[in-house]
Amino acid sequence: MGGTKNYYFKIRSDILTALPEDISSVLSLGCGGGETEIRLKESGKVVYAVEREASFKPKLEKILDRVIIADLDQDRLDLPQDFFDCILLADILEHLRNPEAVLQGLKQYLKSGKYLVISAPNIRHASIIKDLLLGRWTYADAGILDRTHLRFFTLADLTKLFTRNGFELLHIRRKFIPLVYEHAKYRWQERLYPVINRIFNTGINPLLYIPWLREFFVYQYIVILKKAI
Image (cartoon, rainbow, N blue to C red; front, side, top):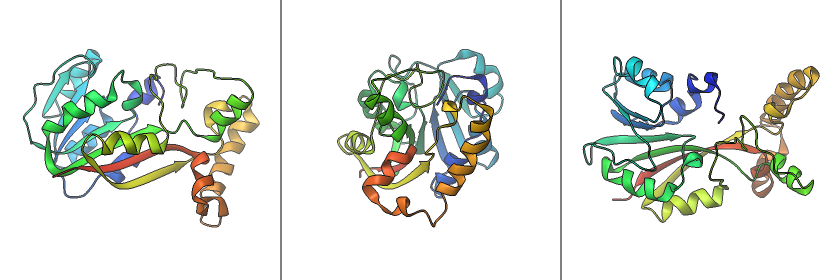
């Protein structure tokens, strides 16, 4: 969710494992360096990608089926209608000025009954609540308050956004990170935070079984939806 170079070239294994199995064509919006999309292509899928940064195109157009340079908030996409089995928006909604308009525009490219997969940060995370109680709202180079984020969502916000735009919720994956890595200021914190986060994610943690409480420790949601028939 940050803007660093490593972020743009990261393979999103969490996204790859969340994708439905019955897909053969994927449209990925905001693909960055395209490492995740390359893995999808290597698995035999037809992969189209849309990216705002033109410098990524020379590499990706040699591998993917089609690469389009466009601004999702401004440009109309020249794509076949009712063509894709899956549209992927990995950490993109929070960067859009008008995510609702973008979702409406994307529906025409997706087959009926097929899938929209998104990931988005959780503004309800405990670290954000803590800072608000302390009177702070501080943007950073990465994380939930990445300075490039224009929109912020809770799970309820996301659900309403999708349902009113013609998508049916199928499944939600939660990425639990109680101690946020970008908040680690000292070396001992860098060592300790991953250990505590791993312990938190074990099945013996009672907090994971209290629905209203566990949402405060969700760092990111991966939501799988389908286009209403």
